[in-house]
Length: 188
Image 1 (cartoon, one colour):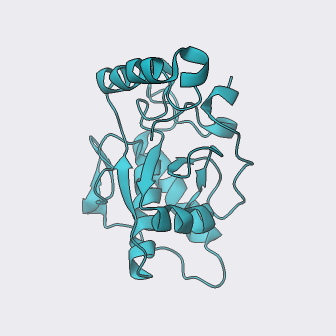
Image 2 (tube, helix red, strand yellow):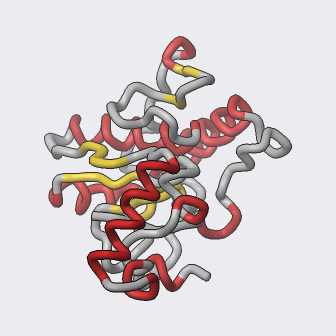
Image 3 (cartoon, helix red, strand yellow):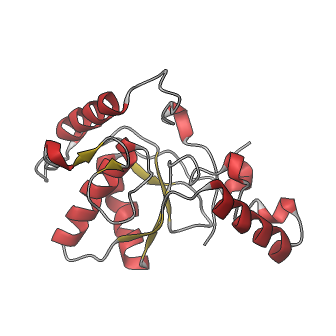
């Protein structure tokens, strides 16, 4: 139930403030979501302006606190659609602070006997996409399977073969997700 690092193909937000600003990223995602909705589905409805919290992330789905705003919005929209279709879906782990991630890394080292094997399941804080706010772990299995099949509509993609629960914002909304990699250790 542990994790990985980095978002593919340059989608990782610039959290220093030098790149896209939060509200710009939200507007860009919102425009992409509206334009990229599959013909069989109406464009996802965006949260009201009052639902946008510039400090804590975007949206109202439980567990989105601390996530990058575009990921929080995309996940919130996807979760709402899943629930509308009767599919259970929730975040089991989203943003993690460095100390929490360090504890997971230390546990992984002890569990797997060293860094090479541990890196397949967990990464140190400076490499974790959970610490940067760029990943969510979801459950239950039924919800994760739904998100794997439908997440592309919002740019949400399963990234690792060995982690059915781990998703990142890794594609433009409505486009195909990149090929998964075996595990986090393959992301060098």
